[in-house]
Amino acid sequence: DYPTARQLAHFFAPAASADADTASPALLDAAPSAGGLSPAQAGAGFERLGDCLLMLRSGASEPPPLFAVTSLEGTATLFSALTTAGGLYALQHEHLSTGDPAALAEATLPEVALKYAELIIGEMRRRAAGGAFLLTGVSFGSFLAHHVAVAAGSLGFPAAGIVLLEPWPVPPLLSPPTSEEGAAQAAAVLELFSRGTLGAPAEEEEEEEVLSAYIGQPEDALGPLMAERLARLGLQPFSTANILKAGRQIRVLVHHSRMWASAFVQPLAPLPAPTQVFAAFASEREDFFLRSFGAAPEESDASTVRRFYGTAMRDEVVIDGSHLEVGVRCATGRE
Image (cartoon, rainbow, N blue to C red; front, side, top):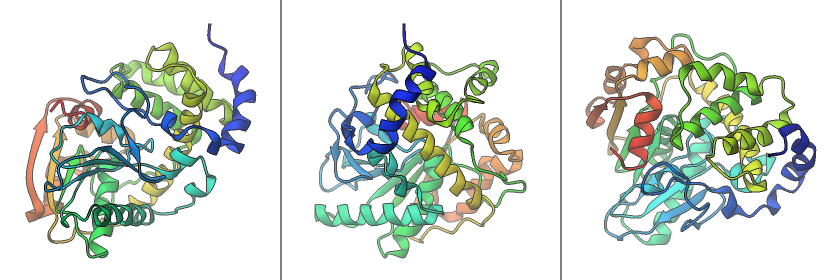
């Protein structure tokens, strides 16, 4: 049987905090296999170009490369199953790669977006390719991708297009979240997200049980507990690497939530004129945003996103399913 989270917390937590840099970076990457949502060999085939940039797959030099922006847990390797003509890259949170607490210091999404935009521009120049590139993101990743597109435009290197998969409501919200996710709430969200992306989504009535499993646990026990619970579901091995990754993902989500809470009270900056928008919406999106952020149906309706982007909206599609189902199917090339 597996050791309990409490038994492991004392042993692993010091290593996760003090010696995180010694963990093999490749072991901290995870991706679905091309055939579906089962996990592939960790780090297989990815070329690490820095702490925040992975090349998931090289491609022809002429078509514009696609840069997938990190989702809420800090990675974008979910997109590795996509078939693209040009190169395919993933932008990920620096803390997930390094474990460095300093990587959690950015206070706003525009700060993070500027760092990612500079990495994209640097890679485009290294490739000696044309100036055209594409951005994509799912859920929170689409929200951050918009900020990256704005930052790239401000640097004189606008994206040719941005593909928004289940984009978030356009701020400012009428009743924005008033606080960031706590570590226990973040762990519960990440378990539900991981179960959804790995093909074992929780039923709605199970969500309360998932949250209750983490409430009241010491913060340094949350990573081992999350890794243990996902292992018991058969979704990943129970390993030191997955314990380290879970702890880092929890801290990344808390960091992201702190930044998106402040972003929700400010108007969203417009995209630079050359950037075109393509969007995929879930038919059941309003329910997710009501439960997650208290967004009114009219705030999360696809028509609100459409009005914001105006003539920049090149094309859109509505797909039957929930927010998570549609986001995962699109990101993994099954839609």
